[in-house]
Length: 313
Length: 305
Image (spheres, rainbow over the protein chains, first blue to last red):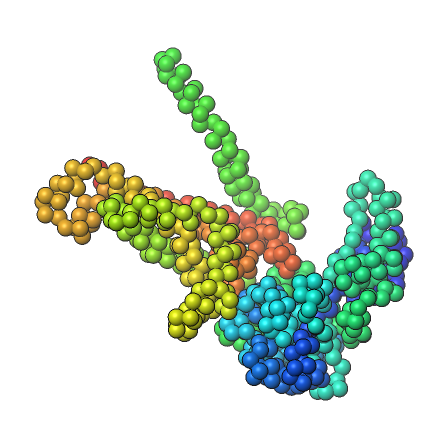
């Protein structure tokens, strides 16, 4: 059921949050978003302190940190390639600062450029530079292995979504973690983070209790609910005015000032073959040296162009 | 028909009917519905226009379905070849040895058969842990005994992933052909084997000229079951690599392709019931044709005593 007139509070939600609940067919809003996610780089503060490292302010500084950690005998990066979606997340953290973030995304969705754009292709090659710092035989490392190695302080960095923060802390209270956004090429340049609306509550139009349902859904758009949600689940609530407790989430709020849509999820995951599914498997091929970055972008473009009308010129 | 015949036929019908009903409801009916579904276009789970054979055309000629379909068929053929060459021939050898009552044969009989009754999901899950490149016992043992060069990326290397899953499957299934062949060999009358021995037949001759022709029915059964299993294989890959048949489609089979297409990969895919059903129909036809042909061919070689 369309909620535009039923939930007035929706008007004050951010555009990132609303883009995940707006139907493409009629432009109406069909849900109240309950969480947004942002993709970041987690790091182990104890390792940084022990090796006298600082949060990197450029891509090269980040690689230098990884190199120093590897020299000290610690696995620099927890990430692996067994699960394609984890590679898609990796690309969501690393690539926006190299493909031109929202200016590329906006041109992409309009069809003014496409996935074979050299900016996007070159940005994927940055992922290859991380391979020496991933665990040995990283293509066999699954998502659970990644989480486990960061939680157990075997690996010093974990590139992933902010949703991990609460889980990491609950699994190992002694873990001292912090986050920083994907680095830009040049020190001082803005650092963009991919973000997206994660889920929403909707009302079934055939419900026998429409009034009660609408009343409840209005509640989910209130600050009271948003605060309860974020305090208990340690996830970012898109309800305006909700201030998350804890430094990490507050830091993410600040990082979100430079948010850019998580390209394949936000723009191209709504018809088959989805941009996400195509990219995930193709990135596996690239990270395993089976195909080149050019093959990856060609495969994604070929698949998405089947259904994405702005690409069908 | 005499009264007794009618009476007997009624009893036969009575015993067969429940099984027939279940097969009809859970196997034949869904097959027929899949055929119907494959002839329509779908939007999510809502049926749209009738498209005849267009979904099949997609599978055989359009990107990405064609690429994925033939990649999957290739993997299924690897499954069939690997399983026949390694599992069934080893099962035949073990069945033969157990029938010869070599030392410890009673122990071997139970030990080989125990993994067969394990849940395939448990087997896949545990082996995924054992094959973990850093922490799994396989690689750790290899490193401890100085074979670090063999501590490979079992489930992560596009060339090793399918053979690795096949190996795990063989570990689990080997007891089954062993038992079937053992039973087949045991059912050969003693006189035939004694006569052959008296005629001067050694083990090799005994096996190939006497035993092998007489256990053709078992071989037929195992071959046909392996064919069907190889075309339908799904759980092992789903548990050990995921629905996308990774890495980079190297473990993708018709089973995972069908499931992913019809129901949509979790989070990243959207169900395409028309094309998925078409894949299902193709799997059925391939399996039916292959097992039918091999059953006929093998039946002809069966020898009666």
